[in-house]
Image 1 (cartoon, rainbow, N blue to C red):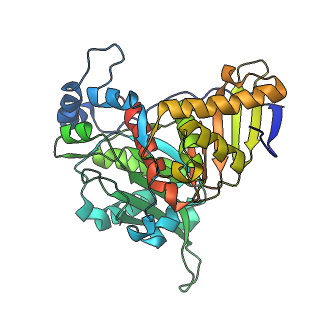
Image 2 (spheres, one colour):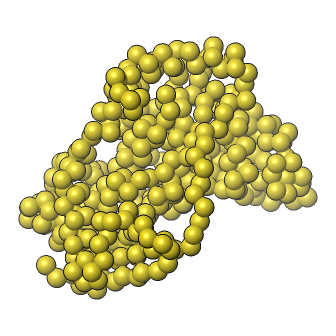
Image 3 (cartoon, rainbow, N blue to C red):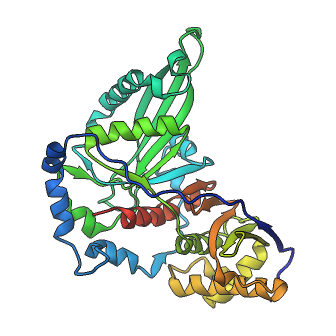
Length: 370
């Protein structure tokens, strides 16, 4: 197979100190925390596998998940409000995982909006220019952004800012957005949680770090949960390459761009761009079907992913004599979206929304501590 108009860029990456992994702690007292999360920990412990990895059986089954349903052709706009969907798309989100929320109620969203607004007003010294800004918070449910009857509905949070010196007719502008989601969450794990807890393990934020920290702090105080950074490892990035390539028949991916990081000194990054027609032809050869039938396949398995990546890396090696298998995939992007290993995700096409969020929900559940 001949690849057309593929391009490559090789450069020395900047040396950046490794980020320390940390999990934010709830400011509640130890006694309060133990009493609240006792049943939550019991639900985990009741499913603990006899393994030094300390993974629950439900989460272990996720880790061993070697196949995923191929992207569906249904239109998400038929289920989700287009205005809410627009708020989620074409924005780069910083991902985190969230442990189950204690006594979170969908019927209290208006009250939560007022409470978070008041909390931010009391903590203005932590926000840049906070003394001259008035913040308003809006909680809303994104109805329809679920795949099963045991998924909790997605919550959208928006923060607006208006200067104290602004006129009455001046519109408030959004300065921060965030959401909590669970799409195709592990059924056994969700059913094991006590009724007092709700699982929304995937958190995305877009805005200043100061505002993100305030929102997380408020959630921790009120729902006794913990947040932690959520990286997208190279295996999950490879899954995204396969899932997004599968969309080419319906939505031209325009260009598949990947960045590999090679473990040499100084650190070396290789940027590799593949023509969409070439990527689609390779995908058809991997699936072993006629091009017009590939999009009808219901399942993509790990062997499909491995063969696709082997084909891409093999072609690259023949051209440039650089073995990408020695490194790790750190970034992928197409017209459908982009993802980076440090936990940034952008979804630019609504057709791949639920498929992408399903994969990220799995990642969040696997990352949560017991």
